[in-house]
Length: 164
Figure (cartoon, rainbow, N blue to C red):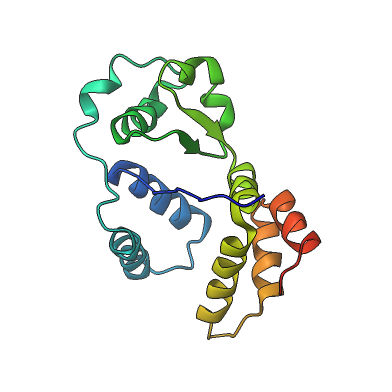
């Protein structure tokens, strides 16, 4: 099945900073200046990706973890249909339904993209492999890393319908 994928990443500085802090905690070997550079590269990679003026929505939202309300507020403000998160338990369907938003795991989200157009996903995997120069990596190396990161079903689907 081929379709037009329409994915526009959105985020807020608060979420990005949480991700960078989490990475720093899990990988203390990465120097702070490299993390700062990574943060800026993420911002620069997708022009106009940052959502602003979502804060007034936060107080009116109900989620199991009140500290996650900013994520739903930003999604609503951006008109997003999907929140991609490994923390699905804190984004139950009934709490998101009135906002016309659903939560998906990263694996399920990538599976959706594969269903829409696996050639585009393969091109992204190839682009990642091509960008890895020190040390060089193959597509198989990238697939192995994605699998280790939890994209088990997505990698299986890619390998099953191999295009390259």
